[in-house]
Each structure stands twice: as C-alpha cells, then as structure tokens.
Length: 400
Image (cartoon, rainbow, N blue to C red; front, side):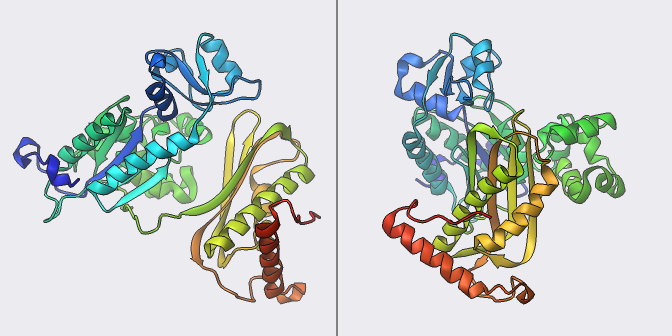
C-alpha cells in the first residue's frame, strides 16, 4: 500500500508548511483485543490484569474507565470502583501480532517509523516529491485501516514529536487531533503542566506552588527561571511547552536501550536485598548487551515504591560498558540518589543506552584497583557460553 492510494487533493486541506510528525496510540489496546476476540465482551467493563491482592490493572476498556478505573491502578482499588468488571488475563502473543500489523501499516506509508511501545509509535509523513499526499489525508487513511483490523487508534498530527504525542491523547477513543504548523503554542498554552512528558507529580506540585498551572505558564518562563525551576532540562521543557522540538523520527536506530525490570511479590526494603536484586538485573542486561554486540555509556535505574511513586536516575560515563563489574558501581551511585534504606520497593529496573560498538578498552577500571578488564570480559563470556549450553540457572555469580 502506498500513501498515494489515499491521496485527497491538497485544496481540501489548509497548506502544510513544515514537517509532519504523527503519533499513533492504539486505544485501550489490551482490552480492545479482548473485546475483538470475544465479541460478547463488547460494551462491557473489561479489565486486563489480575484481581489478586497485589495485582495491578494493565489496561481497561472505556466502559471500565467510566467507573474511574485506570491503567497501573492497584487491582483492589479497581475492584472497589467497578465490582462488576470482567477480568481477563493478558495474551501477549496476540498483542504482538496485532501490534506488528499496525506498525507494518505505518511502514507502508512512510520509511520513517519509530515504535516506542507495543501500542504506540511515531511516524514522519512529511510530503515530498514522491509521496505528495497531504498529511491529514495520510493520518485519516491510517486510522481507517487500523479500524479494519478490528481495533481503533487515536492520532496526533503536528510538526513536532512533542505536540503529536500530546495530540494523540487529546481526543479518545479514535480521535484525530491536527495541529497545523504555527499553531503549536496556542494549542499547548491552556493544557495542564502534567500534560508535558517529563513533568511528573512532584515537579507539577512544585510548579503549582509557583502559580505555574499551564503549559502557557511554562512557555512564558525566562531562560533563568526555566533552569531554576526545572534544572538541567529547564530550557528543553520550556521550549517544548512552546511547541519547539527539533527531534526527528529515526528508524535507523531501533534499539534505544537494553533494560530489565522486576516487580516483587513482596516489597523489599533493606540495602542488601535491593543491591542483590539490582545485581541480578544488571547481570541480565550485561548479558543481553554482549549478545547484541552492544555497549553503552548511559546507565539508568528505576525504583517504584510501594505507594506507586516511580523514581529514576541516570548517568552517562566516558566509555561504553557491557559487563556487570562496570555497570554496578554506577548503579549503586544512582541508587543513593533516589532511595533511602527502609523505604519499601515493589519494582526495580536497570537499563543501558547511548550505544557504541563493543570495545576491548583496558582503561574503564582504574589500573590501581588491580582489575584486568580483559579477564573480566573473558569470565563473563565464559559464563554466557555455559548458560547458553546448560540453561540460565547453570551458573550464578556470588553477590558480595
């Protein structure tokens, strides 16, 4: 399928004078799949997840959302809000199948597609001498073809990734929000500060105390005030609140990070427990990096406490790493920034990004420590080989 198959004459739309970035978000994806495969569930409040004591809502149908149920909500709370909901388990093979169909559809419309999760992606549909379709016509065609799969999607169309992302959430379900070039700031101005990705609950509360309630308020900040209130990302956030975002959709770098996370059946709260779990996650990430032939310079962690507050921290180092012995010292440093011993944790995550090709440098660990990086890498690769042959539990590292 070519985008010209759905071409509508340009005179039917206003002139589009800039890049055209589309963000597609499949509506209530997991619940929609359940209703697609089980028609008797259509029109009913469906929750995908486990109703158990420590369960969490993965997603829910719009009928369940009418009762106040939301994704990531504790199951116990969802049960109180919607006692008659129908709970269904996830079917990730089916989700991957339909997600692949949607992303293939995007790929048939443009060579520039960036999936960001199983149910959302960016796509650059800027008109060019070969594909002359108007961006609104292309977005409409994509939405119609997704509906033919038996699910629906909401789309934001704008000149930047930031505005497109916000637009896809502006009208749901099956919304199409078009922000023409030059109208970005006016569209964003009245929206709450939490609308902007990167501004969490704590930052929003801080801004509210400073009488900064909307993106228009953030957009009006001076350079100095933006940096004072929002730190190192202040100017970036201020510019995005104005609709200024030079990032481009880059299909040629599909692997942005390698990460692993774990949700615990029982909260952990001691330093020994947390470091042991982080060590296991870091080792798994390191093994995946080596298998992919990658090494990265940015190390990050995620900590979700028992009250569902999520905290993250990252650090970019001078040289790329792919071994637990190199990753863990940074992980421990990051942990000290975001967690205090005794605070219960329900989820931990470790990730590595900013990739370079794997190297065999000897200078990543100070020679004064007596560490030989070549020996560490050789040990890690031998462990990888043993696990590949005999299984992941065949050999385990000791944790100090």
